[in-house]
Length: 187
Figure 1 (tube, rainbow, N blue to C red):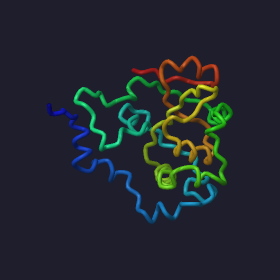
Figure 2: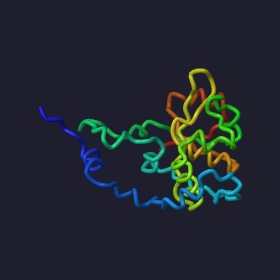
Figure 3: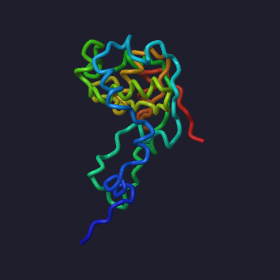
């Protein structure tokens, strides 16, 4: 019996995604950032964040399945549809972060994927639309970025004042107890 696959999965398997060129940064640009202190990043001193709070932008918050993992035709493909958007004070998120997810500036390049970190720096520096970080509750208490870790770490070192994030609807009450959150109501 032949398996059916979704058109999106087939497109990813057979051809390059059209959006890959939109946020393309050269290997030289990426390599030039590796190992730099955040004070030397092109985001240093930048305060403007071009938040993308659209439904379409959510697809960049959580990494999609690998393109070689073909999804069934019935797969909805949008695991972000049931998430809610919140806004909070960035420094409050940092105080509630589970210890396993706290990264020191002097070890960030060793602990994270250098390519992803450099691309996040360039993306934010070029004021490209930035999708919110996905905040999750940790089973041992506290919160952690379940998606957007590299963006989170760049924003932290920029000392941004507020953070837009996505969360599971069922986590709203618990997050309200941990953070001062303003929830964006869906239209």
